[in-house]
Length: 67
Length: 260
Image 1 (cartoon, rainbow over the protein chains, first blue to last red):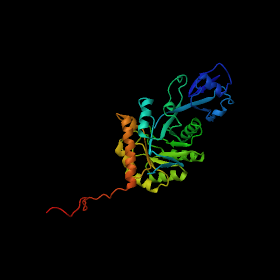
Image 2: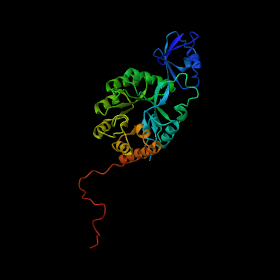
Image 3: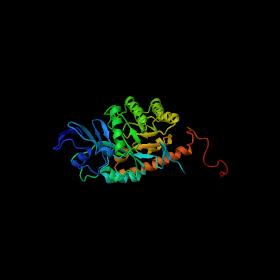
Image 4: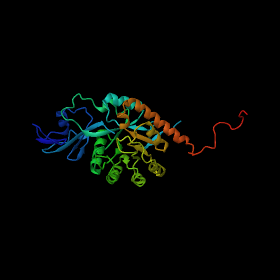
């Protein structure tokens, strides 16, 4: 399926996997990140149970230097 | 002397708040922040680099959130909706952290704040349980409105973000300070140590800066200078300065006992 991650389309072999699996596929495990799916925050505690679907728009963010 | 900065029910020793952007690298960021003595540090929320993050150092490793109070900002947001979204992500990112810096910009050239959008965002965020420190114009009426909305601190600009122009309108800042029941901090525009000292002498509760330190030739030394300036300015404010007089009819040395 295809997801839009941080504004860019990205294809995946598998379908309907969870946010937790996406985090693993993207090698983001252990990183301090926050994820929004279609404009709604996905709490970290719900990564495993939140399933993704074709065309979902995800924002994956972290903290960077700023003023 | 116990003179603590109190924001949203929490106290801090340092009245200098610093940004974490524009440094050469994270080692310099850390060294400058250590020299500044700051306890509250601002961070920006940005999209993570997908596919290029393995092994890449992160700001959080150099500034552990257990050691500092993070102040996530909404820099780069031009609408209330984007600012609110950004800070909700920040809250999730930082495990339910509530203290945030709201700024909604109005123009990419001047980075001047859009106060209509800022007020709209502040209302939503306060209702949503955030402790909102708000970057604003130096308009006393706007500052009062932000306080009435429930912001925990107002942070008027001294001059434009990153300009280093110093305090352009001390009179407005004085009016804002005189009317405020919440802390007033100067945010933006400080260029050098004397600017920070003047802000504190006016009665600001603190100063927030980034570029003045990061863009100095020696950022770590400037961070140390800023620490002293904020402390000196605060002490001068508490001490109460002498009145300005065009002529002094009061010499410091005795007027009697002069040799003939």
